[in-house]
Length: 603
Image (cartoon, rainbow, N blue to C red; front, side):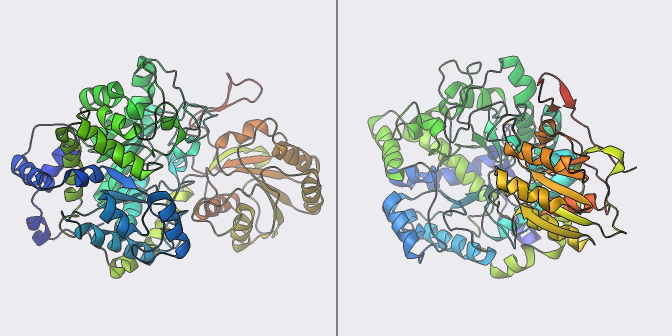
């Protein structure tokens, strides 16, 4: 949390007025007109090129704004025609930068803070000095760009299983404070999608759950948490990405909900976010025929973004596209047209186009041809600048190593993450009271299972992390990773290793009807050794598994969630999580095996 002294409040008297622009629409507050006039005068001094640039939020490679590694310089030259982040700002006047792990932006907290400061210095060196809005996707759980030693917290569906608004708010406040200390002031979270489709390939555990009202409550709690820490929260993906079977990164999903279904299922979390003054909302690259029969993706749909989001829902904050390099928005129109159509639809920020020169010149050309007016650009720039001023970036865009030391990954934050995670692990099955395991006999455990690519915040494969956590709790645990698609030889090895063990714990990952993980579980169950299944991503795995004596859902395989699961298995804490989504039968998906709210305890 940021301390706000009387002196700082006096210096920044426009904060209340800014909230009118970036939150839900309402009558102007006292002082709002003068505040807007000051920003409009600033906008009037900007060149057309600067105005176009202010609309873009772009990736850039490298750990430094001025001296990245040669490999990153080569990538920047290849993709953007610049060598460094500083050159990107100078050439295109971009209004924001997005950080990615794969772009080598997030090595460690001090490096991130230095990169942020370098980018802000480049922004203030422009002909019209302007701070940048630096953003990232730090949802936690399976999507996190900043890793250890920053605090990694349970993801959305885990928080949904916990069901605590105060925990959701606390998690966002911790995450927001740490991001702000590193100079990242816009977070593309929380996810407001209601995951009603178990086959959803892109949302899943990134959602708080399947109940619209429960999701809405947790979204609102996280909005308050992030924004109380000085971070612009971003609810996504409007108008709702929770019922898809296509990943919009690779194709164009079609939502078949009626308008009434949208009102009942998809809209409540976004309404809640707007009511709580959400600073920004991200669009979805989805077709939603009931909302716009043209079949334009929502990102390019004026009926959806202006007609529904702005006019019906009364939202007048910043609207940011999902990444414009995703296939879902590129299938119908060329890359030079997409940003123009997005602006015409009602978007303010254009996120990460595949080719910045093509996108930037597309917008510039549309203004010069009269397709877009300068007034339309000014409308979006005003929203963006109001948000930057609300966040204090005009006053002081820089961060300090001292702030990093006192904020990021502190003992208090790490302890809070562990405490929150303890309330999320869900016990689905416990035949014969197998769990908690008896530590008094120091049982010998075998931990086998999936080893998916490690998300940010893990110290190793899930089997190794879980085995260590159980060993630290007094067990003798051996790890044997068998993978997401174990071979016959690997399964044989696991079965042989199970001999003489007191229990086997198998970590499962999105098990399907044809997954070799099913064979692994069946073979292990046939040994007669008590078998505990722990789903480490989607909680639907139990419907595909036979012969397990106990089953739990952890919702992710980051260290914090695996440690919490280990404490539940060991009986150090009671399982308190409850399913935030229903689990259907594998042989009859119309029948519910475990309903929303299911969860066993040790009492």
